[in-house]
Length: 311
Image: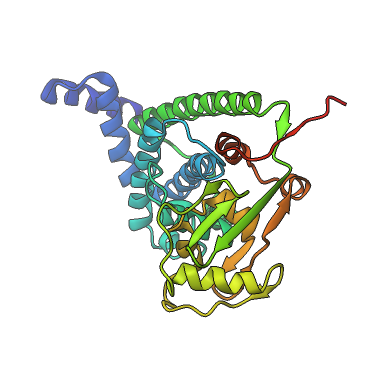
């Protein structure tokens, strides 16, 4: 078989003017399609690519605060997802797996719509590991867990590794800068107020969340008015638009993931609303809510800060 492959590679180089690497890739792909273990290799390859896609998605989805530039990382994610879609389209056993995986919900990461991302991350315990365990079962059943990776895909994976490393380094640098900016002081508590007469939402009395006042009788006005009457207790809000999800209503007026975790730890259909108007520093820290960006914003707006004791 080796001599036949060498002959094919030589013929491709002569006939089409391909270099050795490109000729090798074409032959490897052709052989993979003709071999009886193609399905087995597809399963192993799907598992391998799923692991990489999950890692990239988690790297971005778990960020709380500002993001580094995601252009290169998004390119790698898109190329991996495109390859995975091909594998799933030609293998019914893969496409029939019921558990979802991140790339089936988000096929790009350069823009993750805030409310959709929040709904997804709030309703899943992982981003596709359970799904990939079912892929792994197929690998075990066909006795192939290490894939034969085509040369062109090896290049894509190598580029993905470089982009993951570069993104992680930049993210760590940004986090270090934020920590340095907030060193020596803290926001002692977070207070959410809603002036239902003027339709103004404020954090700590200084930072106005909504750029425009809410309209009387709008979904957000109805939600917050009802929340004012039921602090620190769960309730199901009565809204005009019952089809719109609660996280979309909140994100529409500026409640990003950090603010929703602080003030609306529960805000989903089927579970209703739990609103807390005041959250202490200790509570935020206990719940591991990253408030660094919010703290800087509040300080810039003139919010009360407290010096951190050196002891």
